[in-house]
Length: 190
Image (cartoon, rainbow, N blue to C red; front, side):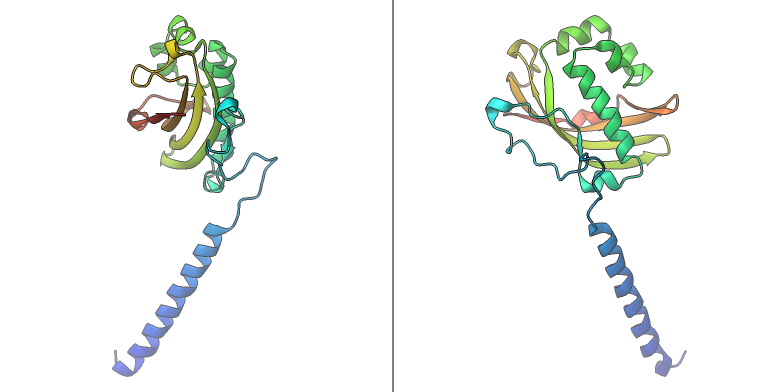
């Protein structure tokens, strides 16, 4: 190729690359369309006074999480999951988790562990596809509980959680699973 053609070719490639980058940036930054008020920029726990913790039990999606193809399915799953915990209903909770998790979490132990727990300020920040049947959900929430039911690692009646939940497709629906994704949970007292 002659040097006379090389400069115009490079300029065309630079222009195409720049235009592609601008289009991609514009598409990524486009605000999510609210679906019944379920998509919001998570406000965090600072907006909820200590006396009102744990805050609203409504699961919120960040715009990023809402753009994921399974974002709304994840929101629905987690709403049922946290509603079951807040209502202290093991059978409802068991329908939101994998069979393996139900097997490893007997009813009596679950009821004892969650008897005073209430969760709120639930925000899904990101949903990542791990495989065609598995997702990773990065989220935060606040739990309040009696000190006797607090985790051994943090004896507090109000805890801010930063977690990664593995979500697995099972029997045609999404369910919260066990996995190494959840092993790195971070938590602090409110």
